[in-house]
Amino acid sequence: MNWSSTLSLLYLILCAICRVLFIGILG
Image 1: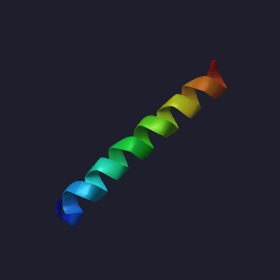
Image 2: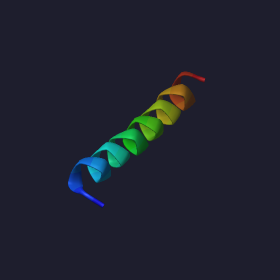
Image 3: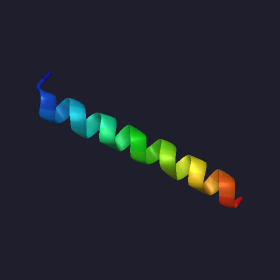
């Protein structure tokens, strides 16, 4: 597993977490 795929995967996970927190705060 190279660094680009690992960083992109971490980026997607962080985006999902931030989105869940944002929706949780607004809801």
